Image (cartoon, rainbow, N blue to C red; front, top):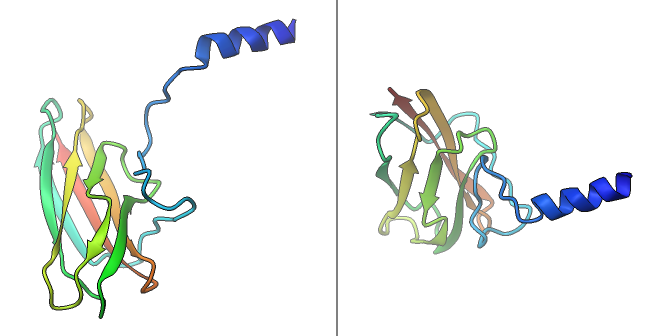
Amino acid sequence: QSLLLGILFNFLFADAIIAGGINMNPDIPEGMEFVMSSVPDGEFRMNIAASGSGETFTIDVAPVCMTFEDYFAGFTPDSDPCFSVSPATGRMDRRGGEPTALNVRCEPNGKSGELVANLVINLPEDNSKICYKIIYTSF
């Protein structure tokens, strides 16, 4: 009987898509962790309509390393899943060079209240990171 239930379960849910949670870019190395610093490098607060189609804003990240540096941007696991960032991977200029523009999108999909995300930009070759707290008040 349990074998039959297992076969039925696999048949019914084999192609199911699980919704929710932060989607990770497939170019981010497996096992890379996005852990927020105890003190963020910046904080952004904005308002957004819960019923709207979402909003994108740009964070210009100043380069902090002495050389060109690969970066990987993502959110901490406790961040609200309505946030996304692009490009999530790339190469940052060296210190004093052009800032890297990261587009952060918030799509509340009807959710109201305070939507919080912690954006972490890992710089693995330099063994450092840049962190931003993003808070949208959705009404």
